[in-house]
Image (cartoon, rainbow, N blue to C red):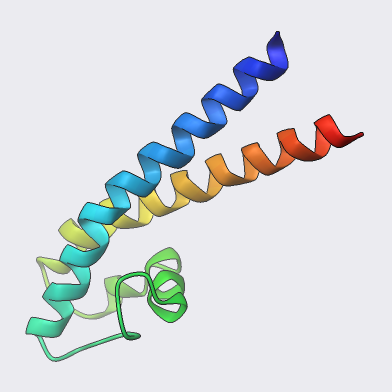
Length: 95
């Protein structure tokens, strides 16, 4: 029973993180496009995802950018944590 609770919590984290990032990620990317500072080709491009996770937005000097990028960073980390939890559950079930 505890393993199913683990799976439910991990899935909830992955889905909520992904749906939240689907809002804040493109908003952040669009803000960078408006400032002529583009990282990657889209909000779901690996260079942009690394840029968000590494918090490189702090060094741009734009006062609005952290208010968009910080929630995107936390939600992306939540999605990755939930995905890791689901993968850990799958590995545990396979043993």
